[in-house]
Image (cartoon, rainbow, N blue to C red; front, side):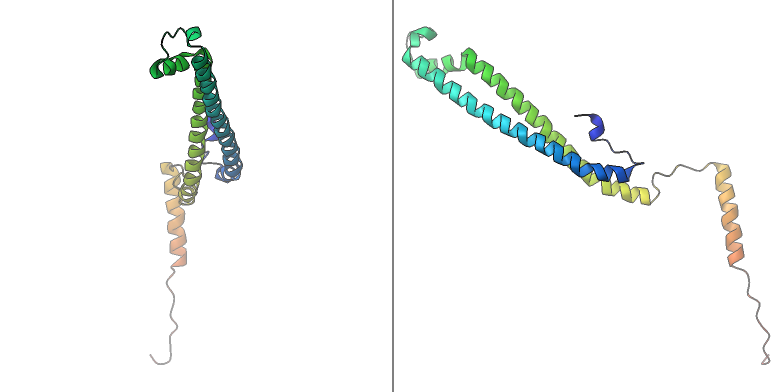
Length: 161
């Protein structure tokens, strides 16, 4: 994922429109895959917790529990190395999912921004300011064209007058 995937080059809006849909699809697929990995990790956490719970119930002394109360068993399961490792993997997969979902949302925002940028471009919003010399020359040409197009029309003399 690079920053350029989300930036818009206002001088190449046609190219930005062309790459928008494939880029959105690619990030959507990556987010879906991350969502799948996260769901699998949640299931794996549940399975490992159940396995450790059964081990604690079977032999509480191996987990240094003198009296297997509900809270003691829950603490033993939560602090087991296998559970801690799996929790960390699940947190990392959730983080990856969150990043990809944010990327998909950013691309959706980008998609909504493109039509507005096109409208601004068509309205010459991004036009460079003229230098005073260019402005004077354009005003002179405009004035000459107006003068040329608004020539007084000579009227013919009619016999009625």
